[in-house]
Image (cartoon, one colour):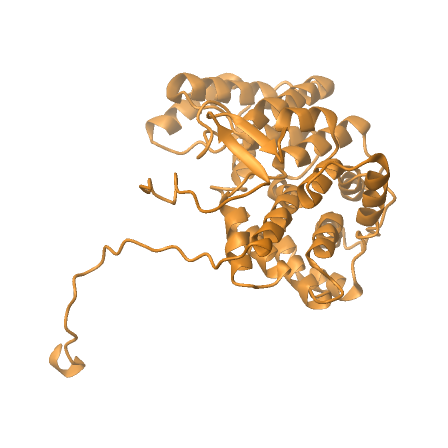
Length: 371
């Protein structure tokens, strides 16, 4: 198959986990539409679906939530590592380092398999991030084990150190569902490549976090928020975006490598951004976002992807901008884990070829003759 650049259009393998962009728009997790899952399921149900192949029964979900709750604690040696990370470090670097460090403290082995590690990371990524955050910003070593019933509530409680708002919990839960899985994207493919070498689970996840850190992948939501926050009204936003387009500056949060008509996740998270905007009486952030969306549609016929309205939705519940992509990690670990396990089940080393475009064959001239 012809390569459009960056492996676009190249089929790199088979998967039973997700479909992306069927007829330019759809997204399913193991056969269930993203609209159905976001509207009727919880993140814990979706995590179970991705890892175990089917939605859980009531009893299975209760047991699974208990498994995740029991995975929230951090070993003292990991806390020591987290405490050494500078306060100006990017939170993505904190999760990358924390994941790698945990892999040395609780290594994969005969008594700790891939599923156990996956659930451990789902349970404790929020704990890692929040423990470092509070030590770095206030010097307080917070307790990270809570009895909250969901990953979303656990994170919000640790972040704000108070009972989380129910509407905020549900928005976060939906957001985690939307970000959970997306087929052979850059970070997932990175995880599968590392897995194909027969490396360990933590190495695959650490590599995936590194891939997700880039603004052309997971970091787009942070860049979108940085853009939106520059403006005090929609008219200023339109003027500036028009200038950026005239200068061929990339506007983050628009378009997608797979979707051609729309990102099915975007409308869902936009609804939540609008709901929170109205709830808090926001006169700027959401109206500016809508105007940028309108300009991009009018001028470039480009649609917002999940990252664009996620930025304002997260902002409204008090999440610092540099934590937007780490939240992506807390969700996508479910998809990464499912792909790691799938790769292991039918493994073959992933080693693509390349078209050589360098110099023609030439003869080496001894150094003393080169002048």
